[in-house]
Image 1 (spheres, one colour):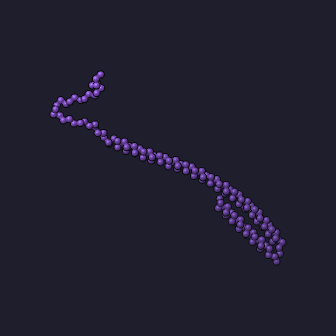
Image 2: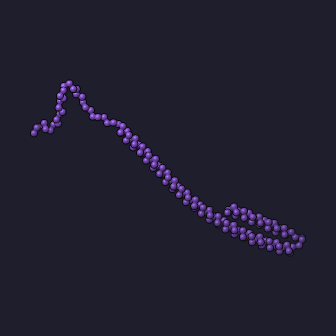
Image 3: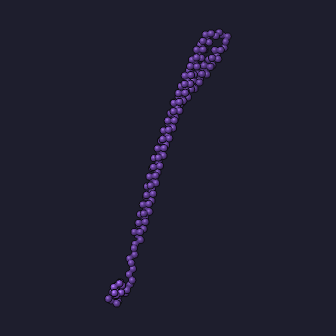
Length: 147
């Protein structure tokens, strides 16, 4: 076996001796496509980050809105319950005071019928009734404010 078959063949010598031999260089690859690729990748990354943050903002906003609505509903229910209980207690107090005023009025009319001109007890009863009426008016105002 000869070594000539395993060696690569050389290019034939130029026919013309006047031609200069210049080494061939590999063609230069342009850097522009490489830079464009990097710019596209960076832009895609920035756009993706922006879109993801907007998605997170919307998601957080909707979650926060749902939580706030739930808390407001709970507060409204609590407020309604308190208002109803206060209203019931004021109505109860109003009926108690009304019954007291009526009994004092009856006592006063009975006392006026039985009292002679020398006693001054009727004035005390009148002032007590006036104070009770003031308290009833104040409670009515408070009830109206609560409504």
